[in-house]
Image 1 (tube, each protein chain N blue to C red):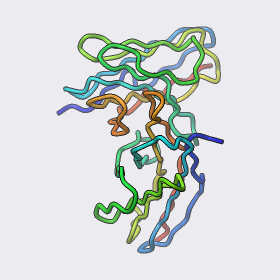
Image 2: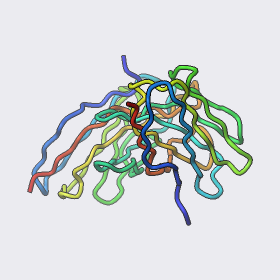
Image 3: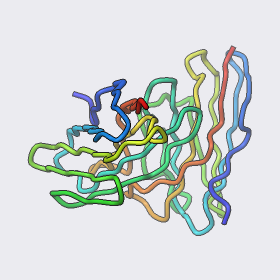
Image 4: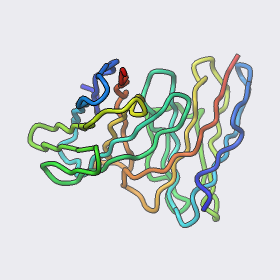
Length: 111
Length: 113
C-alpha cells in the first residue's frame, strides 16, 4: 500500500461545477494534511491545510478530513479554467521527519 | 521578501558525473527539504535538514547527499549520475520541522545524457 494515494486522473469538470479530489493515507498517526496545487511547469504551492475531522472552508475551497477512514478530500466550488492544474495531497508522517506527497490528480476544467 | 531560490535552474550532465544543486530558504526559515519530481509523479522526499542536522531521509541511494550551512542554505549532491536521475529537483523551506507547510522554489531541472 502506498503511503499517500490519489487517483491520477485526468478529472474533467465543466466550468462552474464542483470538482472533488480524494486522497487516502496509510499512517494512522498522521495529524495534519495538506493540499498543494501545481500548474504545469511550475512548483507546488500550498492551498489548504486541515488538522481536525470535519470540513474546513477557504473561499471556493473546502477540505474534508475523516481520520477513522484515513481519507482527506478537496472540493472546489464554482470551478474556473484557472483551477486546471495537478492537485497534490501531502501528509507529514508521524514516525519520521518527512512529508509524503501523493502522485497527484490532474484536474481539467472545460469551458 | 524573497522566496526560496534555487540554482541552477537547468543543467545537463552525462552519466557518471556529479552535480551540486543549491537552495536558499525564505528568511527566518530553518528547515530545508529536498524532493525529486519526475514527470507525471508527485514529489519524492529525499532529505530534510533542520538547524544544520539531517532530520529525515527518503529511499534514495547513498549517491545522494546533502548538507545545510549556518545561514540555513543547503546543497544537494548527486554522485555517479544515472539516466534515471533526470528529474526536477525541488527545494522547500519551512519555519520548523514536521510541518507540511512547505514553500517551494522553482526547482532545478537536471537532464542526464
